[in-house]
Image (cartoon, rainbow, N blue to C red; front, side, top):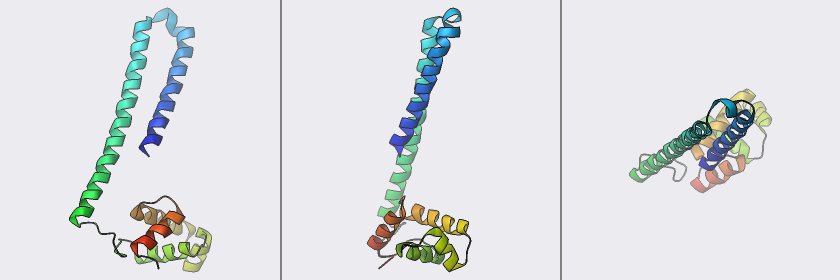
Length: 145
């Protein structure tokens, strides 16, 4: 995910650079010395790089903290001992059966938004991004048969 953020920030800074270049031709070239203009661009790129680095470091630290908690036994994701609620387990079982969100909503008599919230919570708790990954990880952890 850090690479994606870096690419987005790089793209935004690239667009800023193109915009500044267009402005340089029409406005800045006559009023601001080139050295100051280039210094401003360098500061923008520096700020973007620092922001991307800070985001990356924060996510890395969060991942390390979770890893340390697992090692200390504060988090246990072995043999079905996840912190999934009963309702989230129900939703996960229906996902494993191949049901859509709407079908799950109808079967459990809850709103579609509630199913989406439960699904999002499942993804977060299992650290996955897709339904198939959630089912696979739940099977690996012994949550699902």
